[in-house]
Length: 462
Ligand SMILES: *Cc1c(COP(=O)(O)O)cnc(C)c1O
Image (cartoon, rainbow, N blue to C red):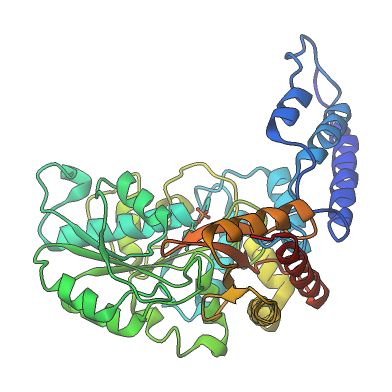
């Protein structure tokens, strides 16, 4: 049954119609899914059919059955975890990526997508003030971006100790010590596990979750061999940034590799507002961030940046894996990330930045933080609400008194349906955690959110 080119037209038009309907419903619909996963599994429980089904019918069925089980993550009233929405240009270009279906591994084979990602990478380095010669790779997310930076670091610190990890592996190698703040994100720990480096040694952090320099100095004084320091820009609960310049200086004195996990917070570097808070950021060796959080491109897209491009290539080049190359050779996309075959997920990043421009990008980031501050202010004025963190970026952590009461208010808030925010624990305390990460959240959404919390608080008499 050969396809004729026009067979794409109807299913794509239908997909666009369903997608538009979904997106247009976001401003008014409740955020939570109406059905749970068991109900959805039942809805999709049909046996695999013997014969084919028309593509347009497949798209219709998908939209109809899935809709009750979709979380409105793109809603301006969604404040859960740290999840962005999607900018129109980013979404539309993501569709182009799928339609073009380029295997974006090699520059000569897929020149257009390789060139566009190259440009997106250059724009990111420029916006964030990172070294212009850095390697930029597009990964599935922050976890794999952390993996890339830490893999490059592992190779480099072992190389400096006279050990070639690509050739000889880790068995019998000098021990690599990894230091990280006590509030390191679990994805850094996961990446270290993938890399055979085990659990990091945790360094005490302060009340905002920032690594403490005195504790770091004390810990580093006990280390003699290869060392990696993982810092954080954007604490999940407070949004706080580690004290970069001094921590990085100390680590470099010890010959360490410094990796910065900035999954959502690295974008603060685009605005002069956080210039002091992020002083020294550019002196690190590698950085990880997400585009699917603060930049608001569709899932999935992380960005792995390594200052010494050769260190990333050494870890990921499939053909010449022995030596760290520091020459000006332009690496192929597959030399910068774990995958050989992958979609050109850097293109929605290019489109987001192209559509926003420099000012628009800065406004997006500052706007998220401004909304977080308004939310925190509004919530502070409600009786029985305690904002626990200094609201320095997009994150707000709130307590409603006891753990039990905080959990009950959080549940009442989610049942209410107008907004969606996550429960969490921070430094042993139950909290409601609010993340303002959606480009479309506006003052009206912030007001609705404050009202919704006030309603939930009034409902719980504990
Ligand atoms: C979200 C997040 C990650 C992990 O990113 P994914 O895109 O979910 O893989 C890492 N670090 C921090 C601080 C995060 O917020």
